[in-house]
Image 1 (cartoon, rainbow, N blue to C red):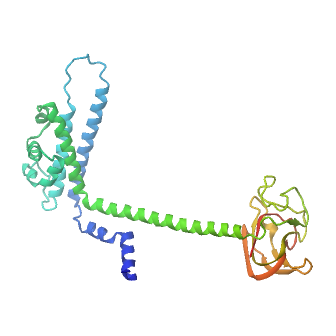
Image 2: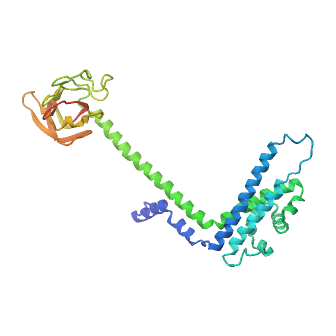
Image 3: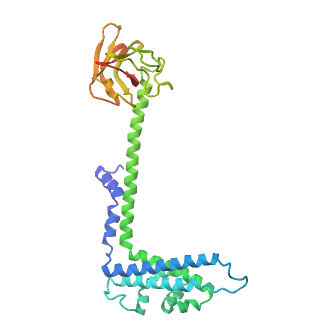
Length: 339
């Protein structure tokens, strides 16, 4: 069953604007000034932990002063674990501040009871209880006394928990940003599609004109020749890449095409020289003749142009002439004659 137009339009609008997800994101609780300050503390602690890890890793690479076999205590894990624990604490306070304006004003062990069990499981799938206990007991001294393997595991779990809590604190902002970038992506997609359609239409028109061009391969001659150009019937040649003929300065210079037989003509496209002197080609008229004696003007261009497409009612013609009506030089880069 074909969707109703209104329903289809609504679906397209929703796909583009993502209105429902945006509305759901706006319904999420907005952070208070207090929550923003606490969240910033959480981010700062997490950043310090990350920096501590990077410094420790760099130091491990530069161990040339240590004799082989000397025991080295890994001091990075206790420090990073404590910093991630602080990040978890401040992020939990930011969430608690929605209902308690005094959250985070002093250290409160009860904050650990507010942690969502699902977040603990997500950070430590098989060790949620151990992770919660470590948060309660934690300090850099506590973490330093743990076995090295346990230190590493806890450091990773605390980092994951910090990231999950910060994402929850910023849930509204992240959701709105996601909708915004979805809109940007879909607008870009629609713009590319539009450009492809327009480009395809231009390409199709140009190639269609090329396929229908009655002047293709037909001999031409100019009223005079100022400098060497292409040799008839060519309109593209290496000797003169910006034009295919160039007359001397004279009154009413012209370029004329012999179609070989009388044919029906309804349009002409003239591409002007683009490297200079475009004004020399105006005013430009199109004339047609069946017998090369009587000429009929079918189109005229009085405005300077880069490409002029003249259309007119179908006429019978064997010869088609483009003439500049003044004393001037005439030079064009391409001429197409359309049926």
